[in-house]
Image (cartoon, rainbow, N blue to C red; front, top):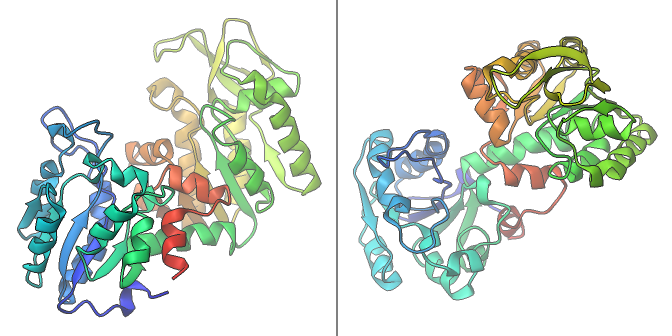
Length: 395
């Protein structure tokens, strides 16, 4: 397998699969350009080394060719970041698109229309993948956020590419995840939050084999509290996942992995920022009240474990951080991770809500690495083989 830095890009078309699935407002302006910024190093490096660059991505979940999902909307931001003109192709005829790529001069950039306008993309169609491969001399997969999809542009295309490699972003993502899952310096602590056990169960089970400590927060903690016989009031929980929660606790005990659960909780009498609130033991939440954040004692309990850790993984908030009055626990944990990082720990943060929390509290540049992948990161953490990664590594 070739790596990005070893590729001779001079005079070649670099076909880069990026993840430009960015949020747009009603005026079709980008409201968060994080994914575009993350892709810039690979794009700029290929251009600087004599390549022309063909960029392909999806945007949103279009049903037809709705204008709000057109990649055209990204051109002003992309041109500003690259400081060069970006041409566009609507991909109405893949043969015409191929001819256009052949006319590109070194240093020029062509952005292709939304790949998901063509249903063959998600279907992983062989002929579509082969046609896409013909649009470049070197295929570069730099879209970690879609690496768990066996789509034409993310996985199937690799078998038709003469030269292929990961981009710089993809390399960083894989290296950072491997530092946590396979090369970690102990003690290793995973902080898993979010609403439901069902969405994180496989992650938990895989991490039990790799971590010294697993901190559980957010709504999913109440399924564990219920499983242990606690009273959780109206807190979110999944009745059918109680056996799985108990199984996870047994596995952890057998593996000498400590699972830390909230000992106290900030409870509310309504799912609202303006709700009445108070602190109480997690196992003694009154009827008609619900847990919306980790409690005062829990914050310190969790933070002590984080401070003693050398490798930290965070996926999922500790409470309803979107509500200012119930964001304190998530802020506290984020700051604890920052302090541990400053003291030499390696910290990896991923998942939409965790990353959003870091940005909201202006802490994103104070951890070791922020992953750009949500579903892809979760599946990698579950121990699954991601098609977009396997397609390159198998070559």
